[in-house]
Length: 224
Image 1 (cartoon, rainbow, N blue to C red):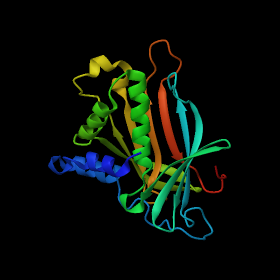
Image 2 (cartoon, rainbow, N blue to C red):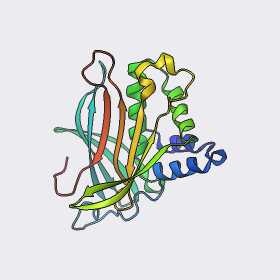
Image 3 (cartoon, one colour):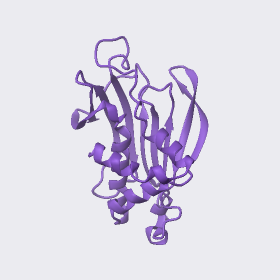
Image 4 (cartoon, one colour):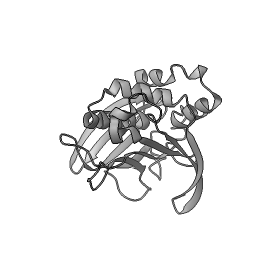
């Protein structure tokens, strides 16, 4: 996962976009997303610089992995961020990144979704990545929502982009042209992201479509 080059790619051209694009970028790629998380001892996971996310994938095609996973985010003493993917007793490091770039979870999410959709549709992940960048220059859907987190109601915002709504290749993409990326964020959520969800509707005759959902696990529900 090449976080810094990808951030540069998504940032390119935003200075010439509308105000709504700047707002969308600021919400999705918040550089201070990890503010308040520090490596070290503490009474909570956030105080210890550790967050755990549940990840569930459904509707992946042959060669891809459906199932339930967890992702651990850990702030290290050198102010880098380590991501680790867990499934059962197995684990795999996803890389270490400077905390100054924000929460790298969103870039992992986007790259993972791009790989899945490109594999299933037969399209180019580079083409799709550029369409997502262009979608940030258009109006996105930003709506206020209320979440229940740690036994209380908190305010949040849900940002939704549909990168292929006006794409010239939309007809050739079939159901994948309806890809929706919805990210729910809040100042009151440690790590900024409450959920990151990608959805594609089911094909004709299929029982379910594609879904890739990452959700912050509430404290006290165990570790991966």
